[in-house]
Length: 503
Image: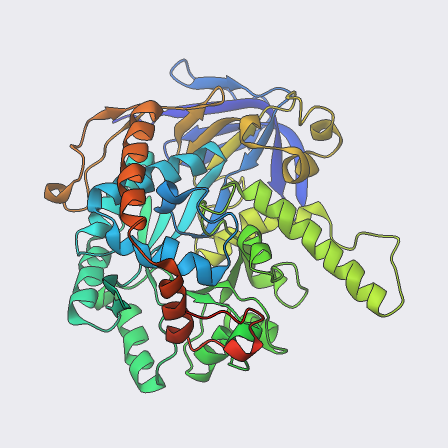
């Protein structure tokens, strides 16, 4: 079968030099099959090559989202005023109410929303795995959307009772490991598009339990995880507990395959532990700011091992440029406050836009363990590419002055004319293309019949019907009791909590 070729002609390419600085360069870019075949002036092609006129447009590496719960589309708008404790019963624990069909449609909608916003790779902390067949539904949706993903299987948390609230944790069961290992051994899927990783949140157990567990996750014969990701938060609600990176370091478990999400309220030596081990961080500014904590990705001692993610698109916008914007401006404000505390001020912002742009591209590739495949526009890299309309109302002038700043500070998803993932066009002329349903990893477990063609309107109709069903189920639950369950289960520091009311 002949490889498809696409020539992006005459665009302003956001190339990285050897020191990882962005060097905007007007040039052509040729895609053959899954990869970037050539970058240069006046590339000659045959009549079978599709030519895309990119004169006056900005061509960027695709964005990389390193922490996401992709399934939660039906919960969008639900958490506008929630803290972590209010979110857990409504948006996390209640995943125990989701059918495989709910999961498929939520996952597919989340993936397409991401593509529309220019995200080409997602590290999916997939926490809706009530049965062994739920991962089949989630991965089928991702393959259907065509987004690149590391699907990080999260052990099931089954909601076994809501009066009183009780969850059944499946972390260390034989069924859990069997489900994961079957997925991992058969992967990757979609011609290398979807890798299998692992989401390990229960790190607060003895080292004698964790060490053999991690050894199994890293054993190729047992289904080696592409990545092992873990939620890690700090602050007064957790008292004086060690940080996630300190816990893993204490057990000798850190390494380049470790990705910690949030990593807020770091301890003094945490940055050194990331640098020494190669472990990485995903800051998700929208969530962290709503939680009353500061993103850490632009801290000097964290930056070299940092990336950015969206977390829950049920909180807000799923675009990486929006996360870049919040991360950057928060870090600038934090710097100003620290200077003010010392009676000082600065004539400079201290942090430039290029640094945060690199978090969403090069930094994301490193955190995902895919630096040799994605994150930059280079010959031989996978063709995950965005084309921005430089003449849109928001990017006009800005793209001419500073195309990186235009993306970070001015752009929205409507400015992205084209999204290419793995050499396949997924968005063109500013609109998502229709999708064809792919089979699940085990084809007989497909939720929707493979080969079926779906428009966005078809998908939206299914998502809204699922949402109505789920909201009906949620109305029967006492979420205040669920919050108390979360507080007690996590051993949170209630003495430091300012609200006195307790259920």
